[in-house]
Amino acid sequence: MIRIEGQPVLTAAEMRAAEDAVIATGVTVDTLMDRAGTAIAHAVRRLAGSNAILILCGPGNNGGDGYVAARVLAELGATVRVAALSEPRTDAASAARAGWPGPIEALAEAKPAPVLVDALFGTGLTRPLNGTSPQTPNTPPAKAGAQLGTAIDDVPGSPNWTPASAGEVSVVERLHTLTTAATLAIAIDLPSGLATDSGHALTTPPVFHLTLALGALKPVHLLQPAARYCGEIRLLDIGVPVTSQIEVLKSPHLAPPGPDAHKYTRGMVGVIAGTMAGAADLAALAAMRAGAGYVTLLGDSAGPPHALVRAAFSDHALANDRIGALVIGPGLGRDDTARVRLDAALAASHPLVLDGDALRLLDPDRIRALTVPVILTPHAGEFDALFGRSADDKITRARDAAARTGAIVVFKGADTVIAAPDGRVRLAPGASDWLSTAGTGDVLAGAIGAMLAAGLDPLAAAAAGVWLHGEAARRSGPAFIADDLADALRSARASL
Ligand SMILES: NC(=O)C1=CN([C@@H]2O[C@H](COP(=O)(O)OP(=O)(O)OC[C@H]3O[C@@H](n4cnc5c(N)ncnc54)[C@H](O)[C@@H]3O)[C@@H](O)[C@H]2O)[C@@H](O)CC1
Ligand SMILES: Nc1ncnc2c1ncn2[C@@H]1O[C@H](COP(=O)(O)OP(=O)(O)O)[C@@H](O)[C@H]1O
Ligand SMILES: [K+]
Image (cartoon, rainbow, N blue to C red; front, side, top):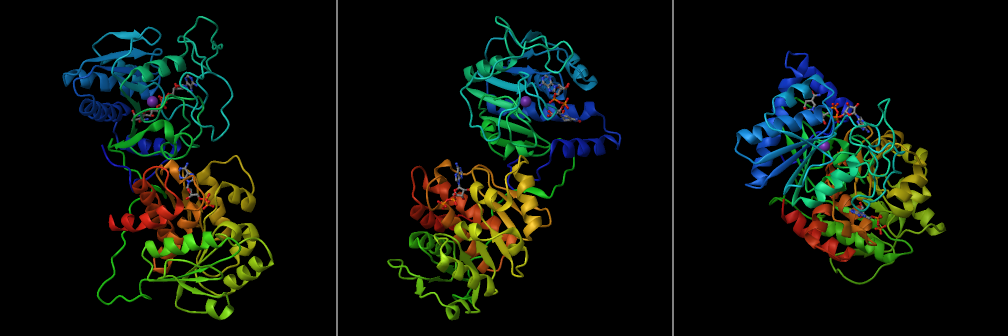
């Protein structure tokens, strides 16, 4: 089981193409399935210990993986049962089923086991399991068992399919019941019911403890709301080479200061204050705690820390050519003073982190015209205001916005997506939900400013800032405030 940091992320079609490329070299689908099932069996064996295992197998190759895993688990001495939704519909899955020597129970009647393995549907699922229309994006997890529908013997989308009537047992209901009854619930490739590429739930699955991704991570493992059904995610190698412009965020390489360092070599950050001084203070504090050598706050502000160099806002102060990054937007306001300060900041030729109100005062064309490196850090509301609303997935939207503006776009949220104009993307694995408190975005802007001023290239700076921010939140536990988060950047940095 491989940890996910830094791993490439592939869409369902890209994964199929990667598999096809291997198949074109003479490796059979059955061999790939055998590798997947064997890797699953060894992972499940390690996790399950001596507990009994129930594997639910669907009609496609995800189900095929389940049959192979069952056979190998039995060979390893595990207590394992298999329950099937229907007959296999692919040759490879049929062969895998034929290789399972034990009985096959009907899903409708299967009794729970302490360890539940969901091999019902994987990347092939394109329709809701219950035949209803897809859920709206970003619907939070519903209560287990909330979506009912598919009859065991009828497969949605098939000519004979009809919605379940009273008395019939639905696939989704069985999946919820058996998963909830298990002490360990493991999804194969992805929880059945989720769409692979968009992060949407086609049908609400139960929440799993662990998902074993086969061959590569997929967007479903990182985008919300899908990611929160996956639990912990581990990758299994199935011998299929994969590359992608999209990667999971990984811990940055940040060198500590050397003996020849001084405050300016570590990076000078300018933070421009506005109507809400606290927000700029937080960004400045965060830049300091993330490791900047010198942070100056331009505008009205008071109070600690004493290490923060405060100065009145002026074109002269802005012209300091030691400034390696300018952060503008947190608490800036949208009044005439804000506009004047923003104009001056854009004219000052320093690399820019544009956040909060600065994003409300700008349009994509004006950002595109800038000749300095630019990092945008919109939350969903700011993103919609700047780029318009869209039904596209979050990766596509962030990429399009980066291409349109020529800037690095950090599209924030519980699933932060970082996109570069050349198409490279970094996906942050689920950060603490306690980040949903005022001021944490200001802290992120400051942390990214510190990374940019330290000389990292803009994509690396954005990625390092998001990583430090997420790690600081993890270390802060529950109910922290943005001030605590800024302070915790220090221990996040120390952990590297
Ligand atoms: N292609 C390959 O070479 C490999 C694929 N692997 C596995 O194969 C999976 C993908 O296999 P498949 O493409 O067969 O897809 P799935 O196993 O996800 O199942 C899709 C099957 O269900 C049907 N279906 C789609 N939507 C449905 C719905 N709403 N209700 C009922 N049936 C529905 C489809 O017609 C198809 O028969 C991966 O997730 C992975 O687990 C692995 O075995 C590794 C090798
Ligand atoms: N539920 C959540 N889980 C993880 N991270 C979150 C969640 N909600 C918000 N965040 C993160 O917290 C920060 C909030 O930023 P923002 O909305 O700009 O807040 P503010 O303007 O109050 O500073 C972003 O970095 C975002 O990615
Ligand atoms: K599955």
